[in-house]
Image (tube, rainbow, N blue to C red; front, side, top):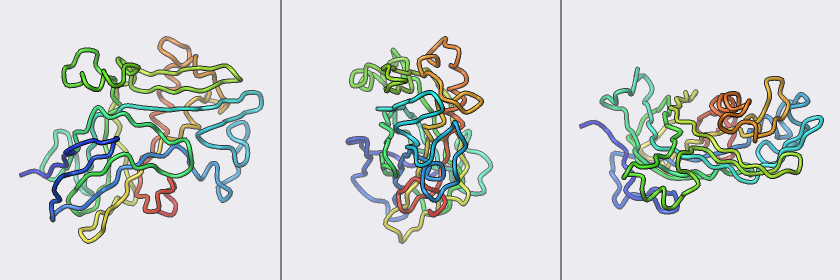
Length: 256
């Protein structure tokens, strides 16, 4: 039988199983938005106008003339697959490619330093080289998503929602992005049979989202559907993602 990871329940966006398979080990799936290499004192000095020294990489951003404050950032995920090292493909899902059908799940991205665990799963021990997931545009009529729509009406027909202020003016940015993401982990995520759990962090460096090609800040309102910067910001979001083993939950791949 092919290996599969199943979330028995999602309580407060944390999955937990009523029984533990002795042949599997726990993996925490966490999210982060701050890249310590850009904002931390040990990281390289940023080049203006991208970030000033010690500027928050997921809260308040400044360039030479603009200030962007991000108060809340959420996105919807529908499917996560972990691909063992050495596996050529998981589409369609072959023997040995465990997957999690967990969704739609609303992820409230942390805007503080470090990584925040969203859910946990049980996986076979081994080394995983890739993580795949979908940024999911919530259906307006799929019966399977009726409960999610009722609980999150702002996300009907949407996949990402960001609130904040740009130069003092409130904004709401929403995206209808509906895409698959595949992130390579190097080194791979090591899941040991004798360890309590491993932590996989998916970092979306939010300081990169609302940027022009030259690196300056842009008005998020211009990136809503039909806006002049819609495609640019969609690409920025997809390119901002990185996945890695993060033993100390600090959102930094450099020290594990």
